[in-house]
Length: 252
Image 1: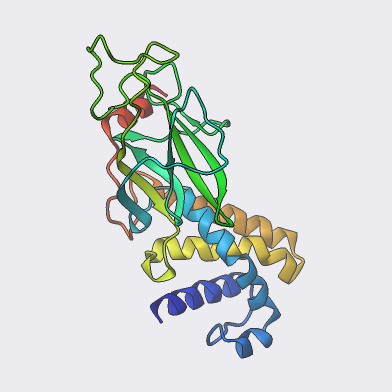
Image 2: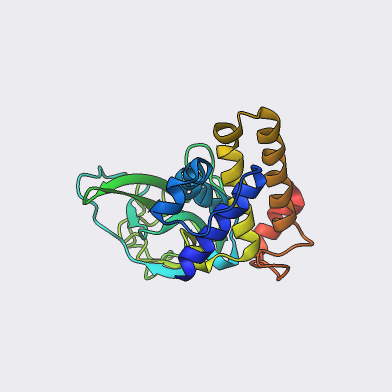
């Protein structure tokens, strides 16, 4: 019931932004009477994921430990030897083993002050559904649990780093999840509503000018929400950046 109420609020906020009448609920009867509402509902799931993936919103962060996985039909990778299957609600890795995740265009993560990517993000099919996975390289400073960097018997793999034992776990993994509607803070819910309005506005109104204004509004509100003077939950502080993340921000 909470999820349905929050979702209805998002749809109505998007309808207002498009200059349309609100609906009392999202029942088939209500949607049948509003073409605009149907178009908003169609783009709403994608709009929610888009907004959630843009930042580490406190209301959508999940803290967990992930163990290695064996994924059928996934070819081995000699550089990234250990594979971790992500949870079904995974959208974006925010921090792995204390290191903020900054992914490049090849879906590889480069921690600060390193010369080699540490993790690689990929997508595979498991039991008929699409799931993401992270592959870990056994590079220096990876925090290998149980590996002895000073041991003469340690396998140094292909690049002179311990690699045979591999990474035993991602602990901790902080990731952005596809949070339920009822879990979203009002700030995030409003952003989702306007993102949906921007996506559906031309189909509803055939007004390119309105679409452009909504796009600009979403970008402005997003910057305000993640800026230094605004938190991710209605003015509360967002997730504290780690030391490497702070250093990287200073040198940019």
